[in-house]
Length: 385
Image (cartoon, rainbow, N blue to C red; front, side, top):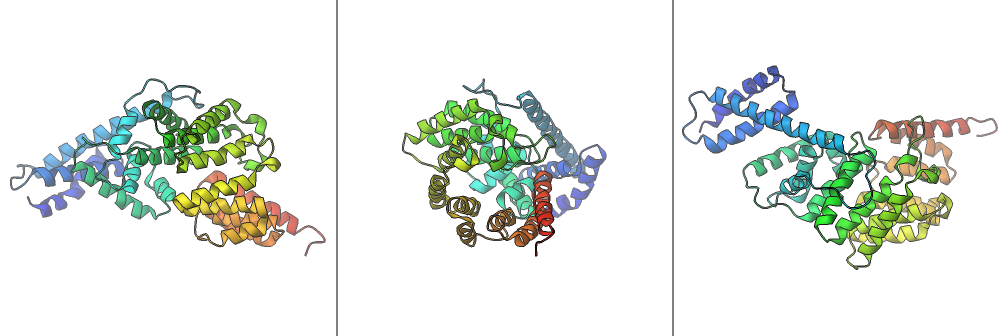
């Protein structure tokens, strides 16, 4: 097989697909898959018309991907905005596809990235943000995962832990990002909980329900974000909260504690507090300590610093924040909040501006900009300074 010939034909094949109506990113994926088939199948006997062969196979790959994307979007359109409580509806093939993409030949991180791109509807940029890596790095990781899976067999589905991680990230993007997939993630997790008796599956479902229950209170009528402490708790869905707490209690009773159960316990403490002032921050810090021991995640340490600031005062929170990487997303926002609570309004205003520049989405950027403006007004009041 002449790999140089294949590489030389790639730009022409890509151009033909684009002229036929394929968008560039999808055409690139399709051509890459066709090239993999060529490398695997041509051997020493390439077809008479290599270019025509590549165009035909790449176009077929593009059409298959387009049909799969259309089917996925159709499934999403069928999902109600608010998931119904209770048992899962009849299963479709989506969850099985999640398991197939979480292939044992891939590392867990690569399997998650591939599934988010292929089935979750997330862009490479969104996945890179979730993993705290550059977009180019994530693009390479996804490409390698595609090549690995294309060369393997789909007779060994991935493990539950990898699928749970994918569902969790899909929900997070749907809950706070640009693509609304939260209800779809809950639907699939319900199906998984109905099929598998696993405390971490139950923990993830409880976590999703408890977060989703607060959805109506997260935004004001003008679309701006409302911080947790300022949310109208009468708008929270008490039915989803009760269901989530019940599922969590049953999982915790099995004494097989895992990351998602711990996160659900923290969410349950927030949901259980009648007011923000009555939140049991001391117990929340204890759960975060457990989460740090099990995951050592920098994001967990960042959230723990907020909890410490609420439980023991803003200076204790800032001390806890000192152990966190300052380049972590939302670090500046947390630092701004703690400095404001400590009375250092000038530093807080500056950090809110910095946080707004680094915000992952428009809603957060607008909220942080408003926070900075609010503090600057206070700083310019007569008699200050």
